[in-house]
Length: 129
Image 1 (cartoon, rainbow, N blue to C red):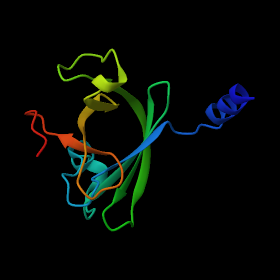
Image 2: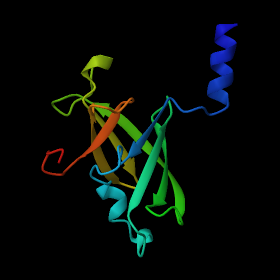
Image 3: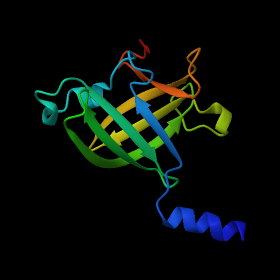
């Protein structure tokens, strides 16, 4: 019975996990999407990533004022502290997303007073903020 439920959930396309950027509000916005030419005239950008078990990711990109939105499909993977593939779940230090050859890295962080896990944009120089 348990296997049937798992297969039904996977077939329905349920996401393995969901991540919002920026979250909490005030964190660094996604540079990957902020620099996208489709966002001309938008008042800021928020993105929600839905991760699926096979390495697929769907991004829902919204304007800061909620008036504009589009979706895009890409790939994701996890990296360890050294940029390699982690051997164990606990070694996952970064989430990397790729859309049409453009990549962005996120670091897993915990914010005091926030009741869920968060990811923060890692700048190209490797700094989180």
